[in-house]
Image 1 (tube, one colour):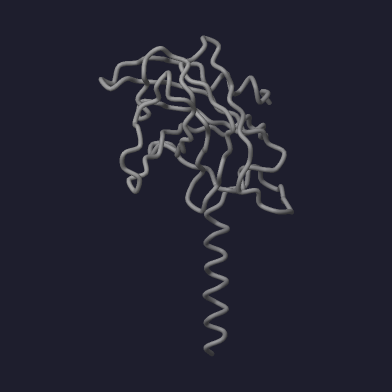
Image 2: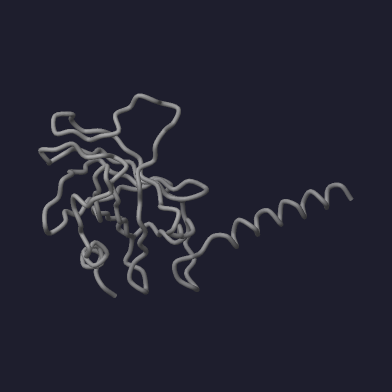
Length: 180
């Protein structure tokens, strides 16, 4: 009796994980390893930008994706890290792409890190996480053949005024990934 209860609990836990994940297309079965870390490519906004990104990768944890990247200023003024908003997309999928916005994640365990990207400060490694208003897709939405791209959607200063806007960020990423 005790053994069958343990098996039932294991089956229920497995089903709960599988139901929480959303495959990218019905009827598709993907075999092979789950790539928890994948390279991500920065797409330069058509109107330039205040920041430069390099050495970027998307990490998929149990809860949601995060983007690790090196960020360098291309501006003559300092930029608050908290004011950066990115848009990430992956695809192509049968319906186009999957996209969501990302904000910097602040590590409260390491106080004293600069909260600004300065023109003379060199590159900084930052981690961006999905904004609470956007919904993270399930880990099965990303297949091995998909590209991962991102761009800057907006940068705001300390007074919440816009320093840079890219209102067509989603369209730019859609064009790069290829429309269905």
